[in-house]
Length: 265
Image 1 (tube, rainbow, N blue to C red):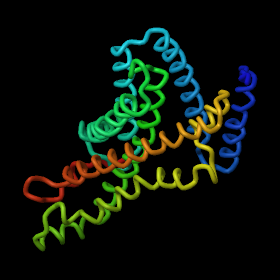
Image 2: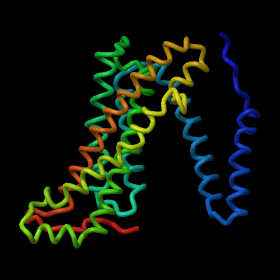
Image 3: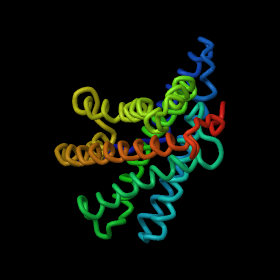
């Protein structure tokens, strides 16, 4: 099966949808047109650059280059987690919590998947390692951002209730237990919805890409099932880790609520 190549003109036609959406946004005074244009341009530049980088990585397979690429991806994801929170943690904590949680969950699961399940030779083969890590980081990043935003926002809004529980003698963990559970559930909603709808409402991205690339549909399905399981595990573990660290950071060693550790946008 031959692959249909896309020309720059084809991509320009698709970009017309963004222009149309921006015009509609301007007409309706939604004030989203600038964000749409910037996001589209940034996405295009980033993908073109990563295409060049992957081309070089595929031609020069080396664990050092793979480690550098993975580190850049992790740091970029950590920055995005911090930037999407309305009341995130101030200072290095805001960046460190999400980054550490993604490192613990996404990196560990990616290595297990490459060495135990998929088994390419070498195990750090960029053709497998980069897509797997990218999908895991992207989805874990979303789960952590949602969970942390829910945690900090709810803690700020319900500060009187939390402090009342502390005054009644509850520990910091007990006083924020319900908010912590709600935050974790919120972070897991996107991946749960994605698994529930896969195959009925939507064809997930990796499966679609493999089918468009000419792979047999059943082989694409098997890879997509694997990816969904890995993403669910990474998102769950990452969100739980980040929310737990964030919950602890909201209190000092004397079990006092410390909202001054949050930044207000």
